[in-house]
Length: 310
Ligand code: RIB
Image 1 (cartoon, rainbow, N blue to C red):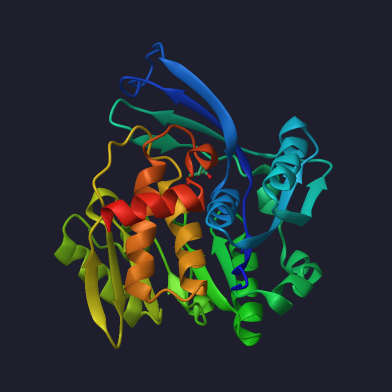
Image 2 (image 1 turned 60 degrees about the vertical axis):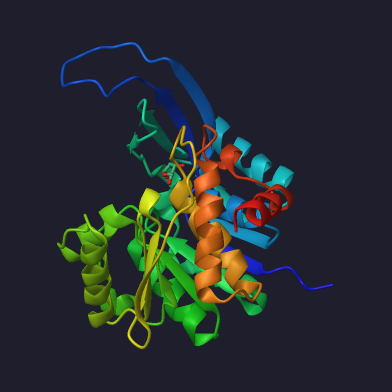
């Protein structure tokens, strides 16, 4: 039997407090929402869960607070079979939380309070170094300090471990610090913020991806929601991989579903474009149910749907 992909996610854990509403309130306005949902989230944790649900062996490196949310997060990883040895509880800080608003179209607006996520430091990566010895892939986002992201990229690259960086949420960063990244995967908003270029059309997405490549990134994938994903590299140019049609209820975490599943498919040996196609479907399916991690499909159900649609 093939050995499962070994994926290490270094990143954030939040608890998501999601309010569903017909529309977003105006400044100074109080209005009623239709529904509330409490769930585990955080871009790092979501990506770890997506990879696990897709069949990878996953280890998480993270920091949570000494509160109800922190303990519950660690228990959630254990229940899902994710190695949380390097998810440590810190005493004097809250866990990360994310109040989220989802409108009638399934679009979301999120405020993240980073809390303990902001305390994941380069020395914590040194502590977790044994995980990198056997990892097939390391996955990072921007909800932890950027110095930790840059440090991990250097360490993982030096060890020959494949590195995926999801620059979410977008933050100004010297991209030279990310040389050694195998895949850089922003969504359209993040790509726009990082380059200052618009990403409204496929042509603009291609130009934006090319500008990231000119700034030293090897391979770029810009996720474009319902339009799909634009893959671009110096040697192979750019190609749009279209999305699958779905009835979206809540798009929160779809980007994370894409990243976690893409990492798994890629490590399993899928050719790049095929891995993106599959990840497009996996992300699309996650939008058909509410919540973030709880909307991620398991591998067997995903494969059945893939067979029908592909
Ligand atoms: O990408 C979705 C995630 O962003 C949510 O789970 C929330 O916690 C924020 O990190």
